Length: 166
Image 1 (spheres, one colour):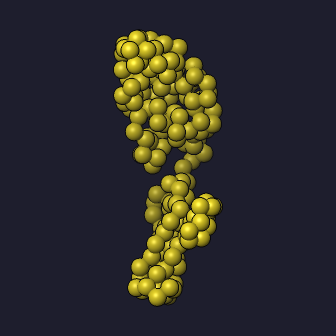
Image 2 (cartoon, one colour; image 1 turned 60 degrees about the vertical axis):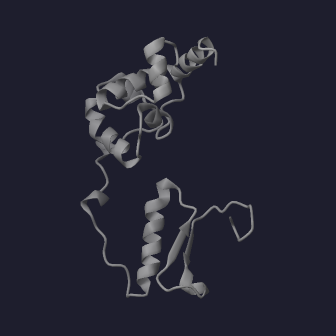
Image 3 (tube, one colour; image 1 turned 135 degrees about the vertical axis):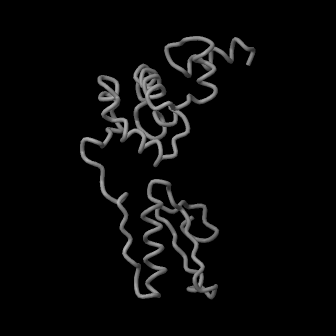
């Protein structure tokens, strides 16, 4: 919320040092963080907290380096993954799976990237990525795939529910 008691959504994170309002020194609260911006917000919080101690110690890790341009996936267009060999993209895909906490192939396609816009592409990609990366399918879609082939996995799930009386 933008202020206490308000139902207006905040658009930025809130970093509160409780000592600023009479609370214990060294106790910090952080609210309103999206997963994709959490690292930046954590760095802002640490910078403020360490300011009392002369500044933040240098934080550098090998993981801070950007991947090579050839290793960057196009998260909006799956054409490269559909048209050619997935092997050249395997490291980038596995990094995406690890860093974005992907739980199944549909999670990767529909929630972590924009690859699910076209159902036929999403189906083909789900099959290719599921096999290549050994990612499971979500349980309802895995049952639908096993029971009855369909043009789209959601169509299969709906078909299976209706034939089961649900």
